[in-house]
Image 1: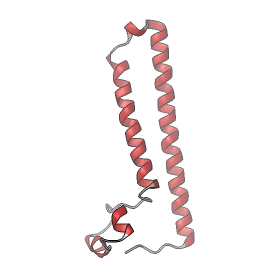
Image 2: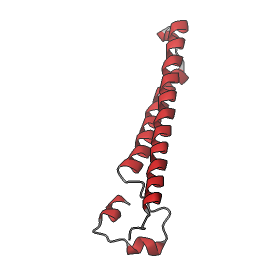
Image 3: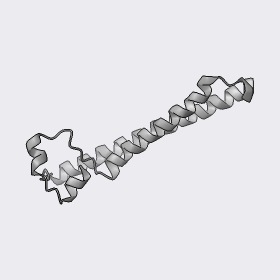
Length: 105
């Protein structure tokens, strides 16, 4: 059971998805840039031996942030924004198990 959308609603949903993707990757890029500049500054002032645990941990956090950003993108781009978290039990039951919408949700 696909919820019918008017062309205007479809265009609005696509614009919202595009805005989300741009915002998500922009924030990730800013985070990556600041992390690189911070690490450069720390190594320039204290050398590689002067790095502390937080300097290494930030790269672990950056890996998780990259994974989160990628997954957020994939939900929108691959699954076309479809999820079953906002559906009632009755709506879930009406989706054809052999259909494309079922696979994406």
